[in-house]
Length: 100
Image (cartoon, rainbow, N blue to C red; front, side):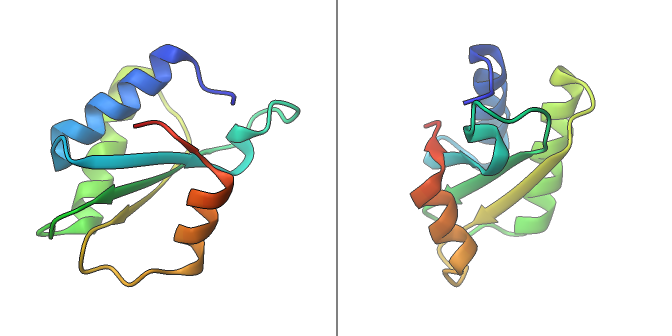
């Protein structure tokens, strides 16, 4: 996986600061492949409760991560209990690495 321990800590801490501690986070896509270079950071953030606004939560998490790590290309999916399960969610969980 091409994320440092520091990057993982920032991602987890910032996500929890927005959506709470009851969260599961996966990184998926090119960052899980050590053979590749570059690429954006694809995250699935799953919460076991209803969020008021998933899009706003994703934007806030992304902004907080970038304030610490600097400009990073981030793709953030936020899934709460009302979000229909989509194929991309299954791909993220099956091919990704769970961060917390």
